[in-house]
Amino acid sequence: MKEADAMLLISHGKVYTMEGEPLEGADVLVAEGRIQAVGQGLEAPPTARRIDAAGCHVLPGLVDAHTHLGIWEEGSGLKGAFGNEDPDPVTPHLRALDAINPQDESFQWAREGGVTTVANGPGSGNVIGGQCCVMKTAGQCVDDMLMIPYAAMKCAFGENPLSTHGDKGRSPATRMAVAATLREWLDRAFEYDRKLGTTLNGASPRPERDRKLEAMLPVVRGQVPLKAHAHRSDDILTAVRIAQEFGVRLTLDHCSEGHLIASELAHAGFPAIVGPFAFVGKSKNELRHRSLETPVALWRAGVKVAITTDATVVPPQYLALSAALACREGLPETEALRAITLGAAEILGVADRVGSLAAGKDADIAIFDRHPFDGRARVMATLVRGALVHGGHA
Image 1 (cartoon, one colour):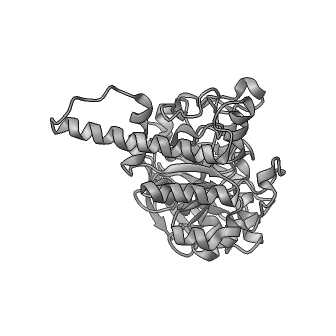
Image 2 (cartoon, one colour; image 1 turned 120 degrees about the vertical axis):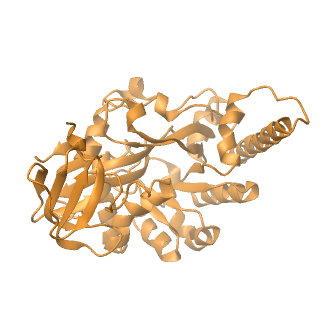
Image 3 (cartoon, helix red, strand yellow; image 1 turned 90 degrees about the vertical axis):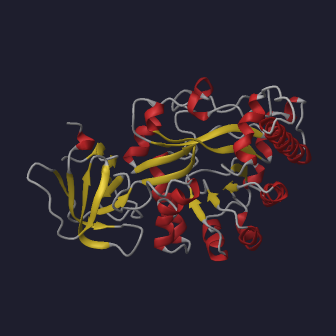
C-alpha cells in the first residue's frame, strides 16, 4: 500500500484550519491522499499511521504564489539559469514546466519549510515571458507534480526587460516600448481569436497557426491572468491600465511600491503578490522604496494580498518568516497566515484543493514545533497528498 493511500491520524495538535479559529488539541484524519475530517476526538482504526502533534502547530501546507524553483538551479550559477529566453522579448509560447528540474535542491528546501504548493514561472527578462504553472513541491516527475499546467502568463515591466533588451541596443529600450509591446500582442491575440471564431462559423478560412498567439488565447479569453512583474508604482499602474483597457485578468507580482498607491490598487481590484521584501538587499534602483509595510498598507486599503519569497531570490523555506515580518509591521496574524495559505491559494485558483484544512481537500499539511512566526520554529513534518515528504514519523 502506498504511504499516501494508508489512513493517517494527526492527533492532539493546535490545528489552524484557516476557515475559522484554531482548534486546540484537535486531530486531522487523512486517507487516500485527502483530508477526511478535522476536529477533536477523531478515531482511526488500529492499522492507521499516527503522528502525535501534541504541543505542535498543524497548518495547511504553505503556498508560495510566485517562484522559480528548479528553473534557476541552486549552486549552478549562470549555467543553471534557464528562466529567460533573452534574444526575443515576446515568448508566450514558452512553458515553465519544460524548464523545471524537480531534483533541484530548492524543492527539498521548500518541503523543509512546510511549503507544499507553488506558482512556478519564467523570469522577468521579457515583456511576455511565458506560461506559469501551479505545482506541488514533492515528486520525481514534473507532470505528476502539476496542479495547473498553464495558470498564468508572465509579463514584466521596468528595469528587467529594459536591461535585457534595451541595454543591448534592441527594443524595448523604454517603459513606453514595454507597454506598447504588450498592447500590440494583446491586440494581435484578440484579432487571432476573432479570426478563429469566424472560421468556426464558416465565414473565412482558418488563419495560419501561430503558436505565440495561440498561447495568448487563454489570456484574452479570461481563462488565465497576466502575472505582472512590477516593482515601481508607475509600472504597477501601467499594468493596471493595460489590463483595464483590454479587460483581462491580472495579478500584481512583487508590487514593491504598492504602499504608495494602495488606495488606487484597491479601487482597481486586482490582487497583489508581495515580495520579496525580507532577507535580501535592494539590488536595483526600482527597489529603493521597498518596505516591510507594503503588505500591511495594501491589506488595510482592501487589496487581496499574498506573500512570496520569489524563490530562489529568497530560499523558499523562509516563506513563513517573511510573513512573520509583515505581521511584526502590523499585518494581523490571521491575515499574515492567510497570505501564505488560503489567500495565496485563492489568488492562484487552487483553493478548492489546498490552502486550508477541510474534508475533501488534498492532505498537504505542515506541522511546526512552535508557532510558524517564531524564528526558532522548525517544521517537524510535511505531508503532500498524505505522503510524508519531510521529517516526522508515522
